[in-house]
Length: 556
Image (tube, rainbow, N blue to C red):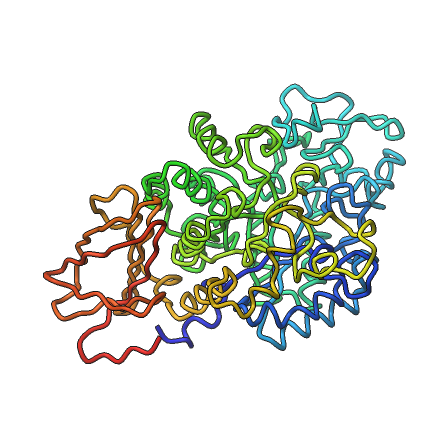
């Protein structure tokens, strides 16, 4: 595939790396990560092969929800730096060819936001209709508490306002009224502001809730909320043709396709594949490929200029809500048997390495799978070195601990006194003394070195991002085998979900006698005979095989 054909759609074979500025690197020694510190670590991300950094919220905040409760959509929280320091970081990243996207959290604000303070002050306030108010909670209003351990209702009575306001999340996060044209106009201004400063797009938080109009009095008369998403995408394209909207849409596949804009692809640019992620963990728990293979066969083909985003772990709880109750319990039993490891009865607050008991073969197999599946791979900071969670930290923040740079004090994250750190460090076998970036940087057998190899091979294989994808049939239930074909190139990937070696025979249509399968992750070749190939995989083994024809020169 010609690079000139793919450059405009950079996100189709990007490597996205999600981080929280607050916990990544402290540049001034006050115990809190900042943009100065992040700028100093751009070289590390560049060397790893990251092509896009996703910033979790960095806006001014009371910090009651780890920055997702925002008081100013146009600013930088003073703990993290200034707008000028953010722009300096963006320049450093751009110099290394790394784009930056940021969380767009506009389905709600903090209750300390000036808009809400104005809205609650009077029914005549110009901001009153920027939020959703009712004299009494409506019987036919929206349902479903997001955080059942913290909230019992979606409506909170405000004494000063004399009415109830809607909050899908915490009571200190009142929902914006996206049905109000003034609110929609302001959200567009927010996008335009950050695009002008140098962002290349946004990860849109809780998209179905952003489009929720069920609490509005005139909800039945409102236009299709997806029209608003199309307007946002059109505005983004006018301002910056290469910018993206990456959507958090945890819904069944048919419903998620609506947020792409169905076949038109005129809404979200990318959607996270929550179904595939949850089936991955079910496959890991069972030691069988079938649950994930089934999901990949079910997954709709994205629009021409859209893409799925694949991931192993994100910054929230590892949600398992789309599995059946029995399937969810299987995953709990395998990877989070203690109640303190679970959250909301629907997910896990652990990272992969601890769930897999530090089994490096198995961990390596999972990330090989991530980079070979169709879709744009998204990493959560620390995954590349095998960071784990700290269960003494409350809720979802158990996986949002400081980045482990070295075995120095505070894991090399900060020179401040330990009690001043923005979050506790991981303790025990996965703490900085045993898991850190410095010790892995020059270790060819480290997880970090493996990640670098996977990223390099992924970027060298346009078939994986752009090609026609097919799950292959065979007799080994523990193996997922798939192929990707594009412009005459073919890559075949195999992954063993079991802890015993296995041999698998595949039929590869279109592969001719004399063709060779060159292993992209090891120094070996496999011959093809009569359109069939037999491949041996070790315990939790993985192989990427490129078809090379006779006389073709292949340089990995």
